[in-house]
Length: 295
Image (cartoon, rainbow, N blue to C red; front, side, top):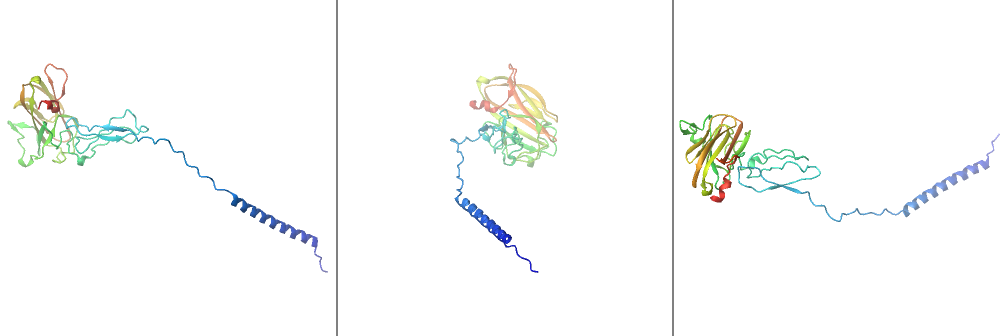
């Protein structure tokens, strides 16, 4: 027996499918139409400040040395946000600075030692190979061993001629407090122990400064001071930093100063020369620059 098809049910299903397809088509078309009508967002330029902020301030720093001629300054940029205002003043070496430079402070400044050491003309506060007018002029001697500057009335008794350095060094003052010395003499010799330096200077002493003076010579190791060929202070021999004093009458006219210093075994060194009138209480560094106006 053949089954009868329910035609009304088939018609309902067909109509339902057609309605779904029409609805989907209409929805897709509406979506496309809306996307075509949508406008692109407007680009907005960022705010531009009326004035460009100034660059970070600069701190002028003076090359550190009490034993060299005045030299030009360098600049270090400081950011106030990362560096305190009470930071230590930076010290920078240049090609004619003396000694070991240090920088202290926050913000990654840290400490900087031996800056530009290879390019430096200077020798850790002993002086500089750059010639200076009206200064101490030093000759360097190197030894295998030395325990005194003078023995049997002979200076640098054990030195050999070939160990006398031809390159001179120059200095206005000696204010080398106790420190380690391991770099030698750039441009002269790498030796940092068993050496001596023979310094000489000639000054025109003015009448207004004539009188009796007291000198104080501190050194590690030995040192001797002579004025016009007369021994004023004998601080010779191997020892740590120690001071000795002596007096001299300086009359108007040429005064010839002779200061010899030596370093025994590494590595501590020191050399300070001070003076005062015998009627004064305070000491000050014997700086030849103070007498330049009389030369």
